[in-house]
Image 1 (cartoon, one colour):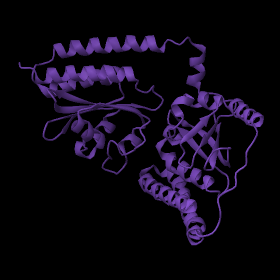
Image 2: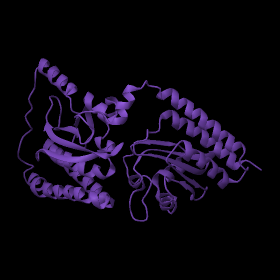
Image 3: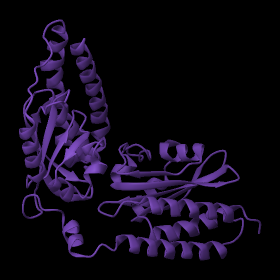
Image 4: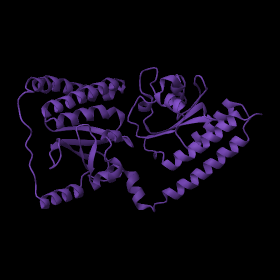
Length: 375
C-alpha cells in the first residue's frame, strides 16, 4: 500500500512538472535549451522509472532507515549550519525544510520565512521548471544533478547549484541537499553586494519606510483634494502617476462595475506599457479575483506566472516584467467595486511590506471616494 501511495505521489508530481514545462515554452530563446533538457529528463524518467515501477508494484518492501545517536545528530546539525557555502534541504517539490546561515545571508531570506515555501520561489521564472525537474530526479534516486540558475532579486548573476540526496533520520522521504555557489559575487558563500553594503550601514530601514509612506500619503491626499470631482478617469490617472513616481515600477488601473476596462498603464518604458495596455482585464486572474472579492492581495515572489495573464505573444506578464512583488487593491465604495489598482515591483527592488500594503489599502479607499464625489 505504501508503495502504491508513493507511486501515486510520484505520478501526480510528474503531471504537474509537465504542465510547468508547457508553460515554460514562452521563455526567451536563450533559456529554451535548459527547458528542453528538463523535458528530456522527464521522458527518460517515464521510460526508465515510472513504467517499470508500475509493473513491479506488487513486489518490494519498505525502505530501510538508519538512526544516529543524539551526539552525532547534534554534530551533523552544527556542521550543516556552519558550513561556509549556502546550503538548503528541500523535498521533492523543492519546499524548503532547512537553510543554513550562509544560505540566509546569500539569498537575503530569513530561514523562518523560507521554511515551508518552495525554493523555486526565489529563482528567476525561466529557471523554475528546470530546477523542479532536476530536484525531482534527484529525490527519486536518478543520481546527482547540477545546473546554473539565477536568483530573482539578482537575475544577472549566475548561481551554480549542486543537488544530491540525503536521508535524515526521522524523515519519511528522501531529502535533496542543494548547494549554491555564486558565480560572480566574490568569495564562495559571500552575500550579494546589496546585503554586504547593508551590513556596513546602521539598520534605518523601518524609520525610512515610515517617513517615505508619510510623504506618499501626504502627496496623494493633496492630489485627490485638487482633482476634478466625479471625473473617474482623471482621478485614477492622477493617483496612478503619484504611485508610479514614488511607490511602484508598474501601476495598472482597471475601472468599471459590470465589466472592467483598462484605463491606465504606467511602466518602466512606453513599449512595455503598450503591451499590457492591450490586455483584457478579464484575462488577468488576479484582477478579476480582487474585483470579485473586494479584498486586497499582496504577493511576494508570486508563484503563479499567469496570475496577471499573458501578452499577445503568449508570455506571462509577471515573467516578462520580472515582477518580484505585487499589490492589487480594489477601488471600492459602499461595498461596490468600481475598479482595481495593480502595482508591481521588479528585479532587485525591495518587496512590498505589510505596512505599505496597509497604507495602499487606505489610499485606495480615498481614491474611490474622490472618484464618486459629486462635482
